[in-house]
Length: 217
Image (cartoon, rainbow, N blue to C red):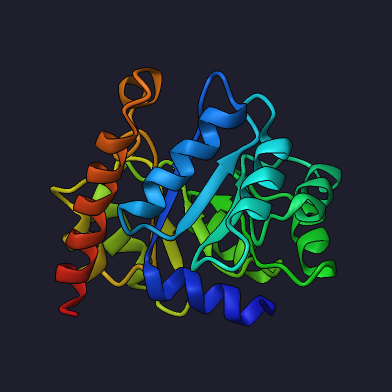
């Protein structure tokens, strides 16, 4: 997909599942499959997961042709972004704003979601070419903070991550964010350790259903 098509895919679906597994490897691929089964189609594999690049490659190949978009998260340098893209990542996410990471993602025709928090950081990340700005951690300030930032910066597409759950998802959507990132609130460490893939799929379904209802679709 082209960069714009990937951006549209992320915003159309509206939920990015942030997945990690201490064991990495095949278990993480099963986690991804369970999340997809639950109806969440945008997956972010964090580089803090052992064997993240191998997992991205394996999942991308295994799910080739499926309605899914796999990206890489917790990217802190350009070379990691490059390796992840070559492994199959369709978008690059970072908890911070690193100009070289944005540049590398765009060099390969992929969108970048740099992390920022203060209004100045958010604006800078967007000026540097961030396609969607990951507001992290969204748990600090919460919904009221997102509303306050959206006031003077309505043109910047925001994706709050950290602190978004089923109780506040609809409120974040109503506040005008283009997507949300959800990690352990959807794919809990307990479910992953227990290899409860059915439970993961059910959890993902609850979020997918909540997003459909929040958007009135």
